[in-house]
Length: 178
Image 1: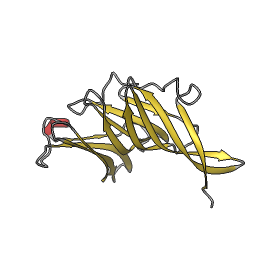
Image 2 (image 1 turned 45 degrees about the horizontal axis):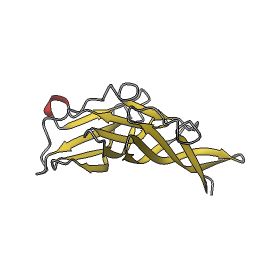
Image 3 (image 1 turned 90 degrees about the vertical axis):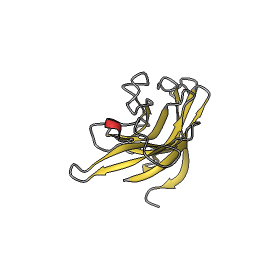
């Protein structure tokens, strides 16, 4: 398991997000834990009072959590990769996926490449911005580009960002075969 992000709640509790590798099935899942201010696991969060939630989020077994933030209602938003797409998952205060967010609690941005991913997330007003990378082909060469996706508070891509599709890429000039 790998810890990739932390966020502090106003009451002093700490959310941690990262990845969990299941060796038997060879799957990678989002893993989220909530700790009390004293460092003990918060038993009001997670399955059966464990303080921890592990969720595959997709059927491919390749969901990887890289960053987390809290929205204005105190819900946890986790950013990463799901089935090769940049994705966000929003969790309720008890650790379940928030069904009022996108499709079953998970929103995705598909930049058209097999390995898009978010590395950071920030919430500004009613919008959630995820930033990371997309592997785009430029002049017959695969290139790692900066990628930003804007999502609404409800989990849909922002129509006022990125020419109407909610996504932008910036050619960073970093050729994969360099």
